[in-house]
Length: 138
Picture 1 (cartoon, helix red, strand yellow):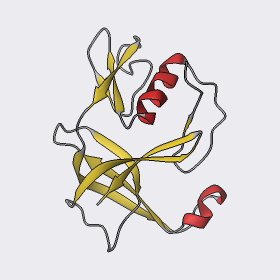
Picture 2 (cartoon, rainbow, N blue to C red):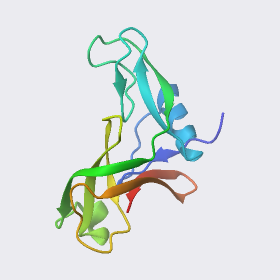
Picture 3 (tube, helix red, strand yellow):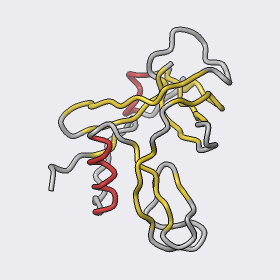
C-alpha cells in the first residue's frame, strides 16, 4: 500500500484513514477525482461518501472524468480561521459540471472578481509529500 496521504482543503486532519478514504487519496495523488456510487440504489456522490445517504448501503468509488464546470456560487472569505489566515482573502466556489454534479473548492488563480457562470477547470495540487488538494482554476 502506498504511503498514507491526507486531503488538504485548507486545513490538516489527523482522522483515521479508512481503506475507502485511502483509495480516494491514492487516486487524487494521480490527479484523478473519484465519485462514489451506492451499490444498492446507484445514487452518486461528489465528493464521495463511504455510505449512501438515501439507503445507508456501502458505496464504491468510480473515477469522475468531467474537468470543465461553470461557477454556480462563491463566497469571498475575508476573516479566515487561523490555519488559513495567511491566505485571506480567498474564494471558495461551487462549480457545476455539465452532468449537474457540483463540487466545492478554492479558486486559486483569479485575476479579477469571480462571476457566476464563468468557466472553471478542475485542477490538482501536491502541496507537499503528504498533502493533496483539488481546486478550481479559471
